[in-house]
Image 1 (tube, rainbow, N blue to C red):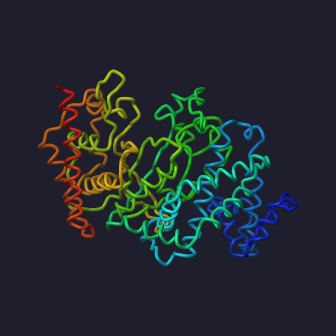
Image 2 (image 1 turned 120 degrees about the vertical axis):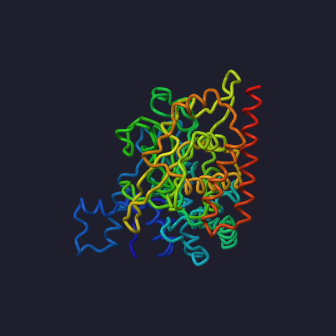
Image 3 (image 1 turned 180 degrees about the vertical axis):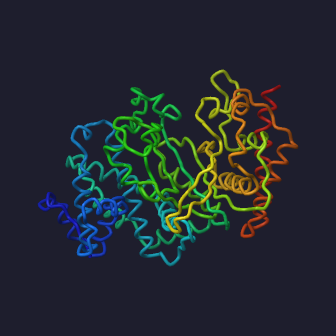
Length: 480
């Protein structure tokens, strides 16, 4: 088995910590630390000619760890930033989450089954999130204790953070707590046949995190400074299990680091490889996705939720209906951001503040498993609402799955963007007939999925009907 311990730490207390680990535990630390480099190994080894047959895989893993450790040292001028504790907490939280995933896989892997064609680690990650959130005060106190220790040591090496995080996990991860987390993570499932995924954006500055609003104004976010130090603390590399990256909205370099430009901290739950050639759906189960979204928001609680993109694979259903203007309005009523502005005027804020280019987009996602391009609808207009519950998230996911299955959004079905923008500034009520027609389309799409319980579909359709009516009544009262 491959091991790695850095030479610069041999004469420090970290060596005695490392000596306490079993062979299996040392392998766990190595795998978690290598993380993204392990996933990039083919590109890395090809560049350095380490793919030759005579090179053992174990040696490759050690070379990747050595390269990672050399790179993962926080620079001294970055270490002096006042936002350091917040970034260190992110590093420790994500390392700890990764170790909990490993413990769950080792001890309770037989109780969790990955869905065919979906992200294999998703059940383990959700169970780990359940564990993480079960006793947040204890976990947070342990992380704070270790952050204080590395600050006193002036320790800037992520490998040593990773080693510390393992000891936190080993101390707190008893079989009872892991078993309870696994059980809870299974209770949210409702069935489903349509592959789905999500992308969650966070920012303490809201829409002002984007480049055009935030340039030279990052300090308004005192905790993270609008994530201008995101890459300097290697947050993308440690948050890979949740598909973490910085969305800086600089389009020509969308997936590449841009020094000192901040943006949105995004979890892309359909992202598999960092060159972004492949993706996988998270699940086929709307209940699983709804609960996953809720747990991820709770896990990243120091950051304000901002927006949500839901990805729904296009599944055939005979003749599909062309979306009409009132359908888009119904979608905005339940998934948009209908609020009163500074003058007390009701607006749909995402459109009114020019946050949206499109409500719905068609994508081609190439699966990591079958290397086939899958046609996917991305619903990009949703507000990531902290007030939602598992119930409301599930209703919203079901609506989008059902509506997508019964509707066509191809190149001949362009959104009425001008009309939507006008409505956003002066939202008018939707007629009861239009709402009923919209719900009929949703119902038709959901009833085509035989794995969903009919009673569940009926109850959530009724929930959405009341939800639409409640939001529409706000518009009626505003007009009066």
